[in-house]
Amino acid sequence: MINKVLIANRGEIAVRILRACRDLGIKTVAVHSTADADAMHVRLADESVCVGPPQPRESYLNIPAIISAACVSGADAIHPGFGFLSENSVFAHMVKEHGLVFIGPKADHIAMMGDKIMAKKTFARLGLPMVFGSDGALNNIDKATKMADEIGYPVLIKAACGGGGRGMKIAQSRQNFAEAYETARHEAGIAFGNDQVYLEKYLSNPRHIEFQIISDEFGNAIHLGERDCSMQRRNQKIWEETLSLVITPEFREKFGQKIARAMGELGYVGVGTLEFLYENGQLYFIEMNTRIQVEHPITEMITGIDIVREQILVAGGNRLSLSQDDVMFRGHAIECRINAENSDTFLPSAGTVTNYHCPGGPGIRVDSALYDGSKVPPYYDSLIAKLIVQANDREQCLARLRRALGEYVIEGVDTLIPLHQNLADDPDVISGKFDIHFLERKITGKT
Ligand code: ADP
Image (cartoon, rainbow, N blue to C red):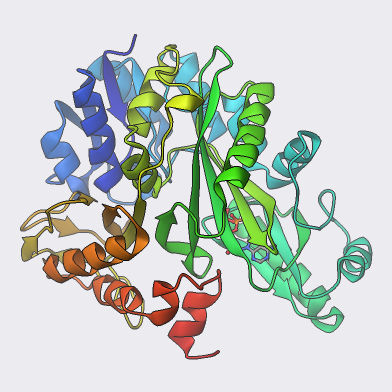
């Protein structure tokens, strides 16, 4: 039984977790850096502990400070949110060693999925289809070139420990393969402390489709359908939808069950997302995220399931409160990531919010930690709010989205609201014709 949760995160996700805890009657402890002393997650929590100066390394990534804060405040569990320490298997292990519950999967599963080569091997063994590529790490240029020739160009060189859209290089032809390979290894070594890379066929027009799963320690595993996250800039998601326009109900049911079975066989406990690329009617596995995801609210909107609540409950040793037959999908939902960035240049914009008005009305949900006078510090991820809209069908959803974007006022920092307004009016977006390269093409004006 969990009574008090320390939330090792900040911003909207810290507030989201806090809300699930409060609904469950669980006490909350916020941690914060000195830059976030007045932040919304600190204001709303039952208690708060300052864990260090603004730089993430010294505060939100400071493992001794966070575990000490949990022990001192009498928390019995830690929720890592996403980013920061959420996929750090050493942290998950240490939390357990201190007699606390880690609200996430077992440390071994985090480590397994954090190494994308291992993750691919695991799911290939469990029968999921893979993007054509190398079987494992390629540590020498001759072997790598031979493999690239076999795969056929363009080839993607990916870091085994990459994440957040970073650690990927495209080789368009054999001529630039050696340079791309060496650069990818060098950059991976610096960014992730591990220079192992593997190769994948670079798919020219895929969609990004991912399945949400939840499972408990009693072997119950279910899926909550898929999300289409093809709208990306620099391999980072900007806008997500569910259900996808390209997945039929029959395919969803069959494939979803296959994934749920695979999770059961793995003995995975908690929430997770399996990411795939979709091309020519096929899904190809690329990676698994072992944490709650930014875009989880769209699934919550169409299923009515509080995923964070279930996540906390299963981490506390409870059975899943629902079975696959309880999962129904109602209408369509879209999430727009409102980043504090200039809509034209994408330059991050820090500052103070001088005027804030949040949209409302039927089908609208806003997950944010903003308020009039709140600070957007320059040290952290630029995601400051998520606008989530649900309606009976996609057309109505887009109409509601346009209305909500028109109502949303955030002054004092630049935001991506104008970009989202532009997307919501785009004929290709309206007809649902977009792949992972659509946004980049639209921004650069290339067709
Ligand atoms: P990360 O962990 O950094 O998010 P992923 O493996 O999930 O890395 O890939 C992120 C994005 O990169 C995908 O959503 C897709 O847009 C693009 N991508 C990944 N693999 C391929 C591929 N084989 N071909 C084309 N695009 C890819």
